[in-house]
View (cartoon, rainbow, N blue to C red):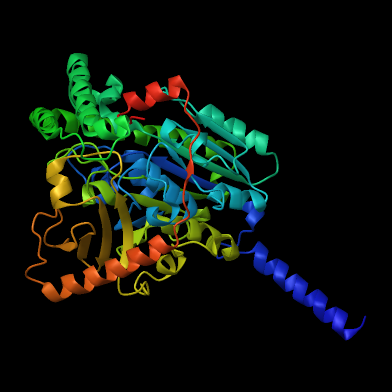
Length: 481
């Protein structure tokens, strides 16, 4: 054989080995990819993040000991549509531009499922929140894209069928459930683990929350400029009524978390039974948290304080690799997609990603090497108006992190809030005035970063009209079209 041909064969063999092997010794064809997202789940209500008021997450706590836990992970946005779009594209809202129910992802974006499809994956998405349905464009790349909006719908049978349908192709599974989103729907079998809440009380809380959300979105529903109608008094009244019921809602919320914990374990049971679990990379997270009165408000979307944007993030690798590691460096969920492709040894699939692979941090938590500042979250407030927050927070916010410091850039108002999360985890004391140099550096960095992100924006497309059943379900969830 000629020497040149022999060299080519050796090079091709080496390239094949490099593609077929990753840090865990698995090839692409051997690694199912599973993302399990629980809508509206606060990190600080999980046992493995230190919550001990109620036993909300026994199964996840056990899984955390076998996984990598990120202690300072941040949602890319404080509500579902922009956050989930960011998760599946590894871009921020200032780039993908999808901020409400009337918009869909620009066709030039390839979401995660589409990238995995090109690698031979068989993708299935099962979701309970209609706001991320096919009208958003997130269905691209999935062979199965199934929404069922009955809160108690179990997805275990669908997961089992997906594995069968995939045959010998690798599986990409995206599960999106929403137990804590409307905690007043929690089944009593989970409520009674922590106490008693009567059905009349559950309905009463539901009624107040719906009234509160409807008042805040009057302008969006009327397709008129935000702020045209001032419903401050109505919203303040509803918030006061909810605050009186805070302890009850806390219990309902924790019961919903326990419900989610059980359902996750049920799905993992199917994956283990079908022989998928030991080969898979399993990523558990949330799209955002919930306010529950922490900074005066309820629901989500209206701030970027940690109760809304600090997200649970747990990654379980095949063979329990890296088990027990806890990463304290601030990261964003836009980092999930690059991490997947880094693990699969296919980084070229993420050339346009804004996030960074988390594998270097996982391998060496002491070597952060993430840059001076971490930009984790962008908030664009499009559908909701509450005058006191419009005047104090504006409509566009950027979260910037460095060590224990957290900055919130209020772009409309051109000022930065500054908090030390080590001494003030509830973000009650703005230290910008006492740390002017730090605030100025963070503010300038945020302005520069946001401008660069806006220059990359690809305008979203108009979403197709939703059917009446979906609209009714969205209204029941507090979304209004």
